[in-house]
Amino acid sequence: MPEPLDAALAEVRALLLDPGLTRAVAAGRRRGQRPSVVRAELRPVTLKAGPRLQIATSDGSRPYTRNVAPGGDADAAVDALLAEPFGNWHVETVRTTLQLRVTKSGEAQVHRAANSGSPTEPAGHDRAKDYLLDPGDPIFAEIGGSAAKRRQVDAFLRALAATLPDDLPGPLRVVDLGCGNAYLTFAAYRWLTRRGLDVHLVGVDVREDQRQRNTELAQRLGWADRVRFVAGTIADAAVEPAPDLVLALHACDTATDEALARAVRWGARWVLAAPCCHHDVAAQLRSRPAPPPYDLLTRQGILRERFADVLTDAVRAGLLRLHGYRAEVVEFVDSRHTPRNLLIRARRTGAAPTGAQRAEYRALVDQWVVTPRLATLLGGPGGDATGGTAEAADHVTGGTPAGAAAG
Image (cartoon, rainbow, N blue to C red; front, top):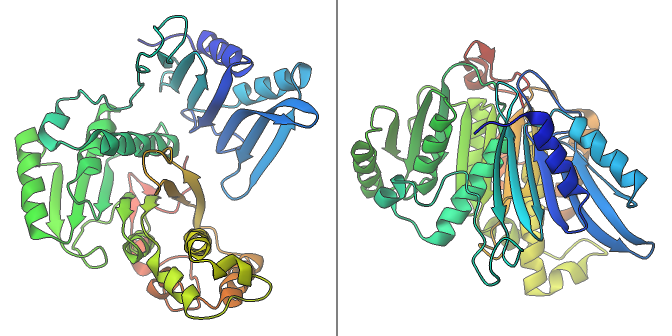
């Protein structure tokens, strides 16, 4: 039930300043408003100087972290963040978890759950989970999925909630690339339509048997007129009209590059891709010596593989920036649920790349002598960016050009 926003934010303030705070995240924006940063994360840290409240903010391109002392400094910093028109707050303390969403009418929709061992819950009891899409939702009786998969999907939906603006105009066209068993496809449709959105969703998978299975599921759920599936590769599957939102959950290796490249060619307004394995760049690093003085970084196989993961996703984010997107790489689910827990989240701004951004990208790939697959897919190994394509130029949604800035 909606609650007065001021009272709900006062509760959030008390939790943020509570000594038992473990983590808090603010993201999204309220209808018709825009915060000065796209995301803020708070957590307690202990430094040589004593306990501090660490506040990490991002403007979508660069992070900024500061540590404030308890008392007046922390109070002022928290009050400044609460004054920002964020659309969502997620706060965890040792006792409770609170999820706040600001509705279109400016009220607060609040979910609260007691954490294990709190005074309101017997010790040893499993913590009550605060899901965006309840695991008991009837759709799971049809689509199945393990508990781990449902946690991943729920975490992905949270990232989506923090990405989309609250005041989306017109119909929303969505594509899930490499959808597999379509757990994310169906869950995303369920959650988006519950927000009151007019959604048309297409799932793409290379296997025809998956297309048939998922189509039958859509029919049983009564969604076949709005959720459809096509068999084909990520790069070439027929999807018309071009989507506003592109999703890709754990597309393996260069399949993630194909998903990102397709999204750029479409001129999609938002892209959320959780990469899986990173074999392509790892193989390139194995084939040649590391540039000095980084031999120690790649000599050991496990370190080389982990560095390849980081280098791959850094290059992907850099290339998206060169093609008119504001991109960030974030953790979307705890690593205990899956080691592949990073998410590339991008929003199209249409901004032309600067010379410094081009030089920064070029220096990185030249130093490591790698040819990113995404660069090849977007127009050659040099990764030259034009900032758009003919396909993207024709893409308009709800009267708003695809490149228009949004949440």
